[in-house]
Length: 502
Image 1 (tube, rainbow, N blue to C red):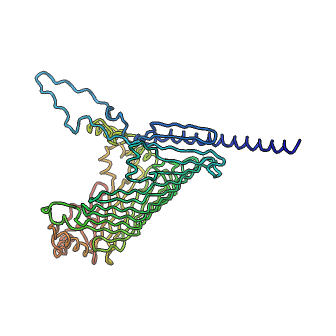
Image 2 (tube, helix red, strand yellow):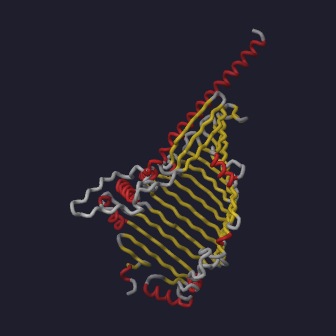
Image 3 (cartoon, one colour):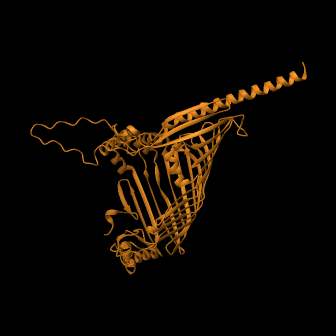
């Protein structure tokens, strides 16, 4: 066999192999699209795929998908629940009046439609990268939409995304939202510096990691004397949605460099001169170095989550050396919670898509009655949620607040009781407060200017009266208080409420 024949055979084999790989990757990418779009409507009734096309050729494809977000178009004509026909009035009786205007048939808000076009390049060499495919995504706007977009984004594309699909079906997305600038002479201006995100998703779409950055935002409403400035925001997460994304577990982190808000004319803005005292008092808030951390887990079928927010700042002329808040939930039965969440997300009535407010309320009650047994069953696992800790430090003084609420000791026998009876029997609420007396005096001094609080010199006397009655306790420079509801009784600072003040 000649050398030319051998080389020709090798070249032919490479072409066939590459062509086969391209066809295989094209089929795999299309399968990923079809699976994802088929699953989307199952997540919530408020997102629907109204149109979808997939035009494929040998080296690539173009996918166009139109999503409808909001109430379905027929929600205005389809009642939220079955309604019995109105009875005819008996002879001599006055006919019933028609429903008031707010009870008459009302159209829900018009749904938002978004069309996304993906230009797909099949692998194994796709868009200059070794991958199963690469995808360039963009919004598709009509003439009117383009004109509106140009007012906000200028000539830039509002949303762009580049996706690299790996051979195992996993993919990574780099997404960007263009900066927005809007100004109206004599009134104000709004400037947002856009956003960028990098997202990685595994082949089964059960795990995701992302990093997001928003450089900043400026808002100035000169007519009302309102200004807001937000610094850089960053966030990242490593999540596992194997149990459903409503029960996603993992860790999240976020940081806000700074947030400034000022209202030179007060929160009343351009209110009349006869407005109550204090209406025009300037307001200024500054938050800095704000960190957010969250974690969620599932163990033995029970879901738990916790989030912590901390930072520092300034309100008016008062510097906040530190603030920290931690809240969360524990022992939430995962399967029961998911059932409740799915029912909620699939209910158009809960989203206000009913024919009328009465029909919507009836549908919500019917859904609540339907889910009541599942909600009660979750009480057996002693669920608990609350504000575990809120700490504020100002001028070397520290104040603390906390509360938790939950159910304890629920038995199968208890589940036979009505919901309110069960709550009164097994519900537990605990709340604690520890505040510097100096803060109470400062609050009184501020409120006294508008006549809303007693003068600061009366605070000490009021604290003494509260301590004598048992409602508060004095602990050096602090005032403390504890409230607990359990086993159907309410206690304040360890004593039954009925014994206080005696």
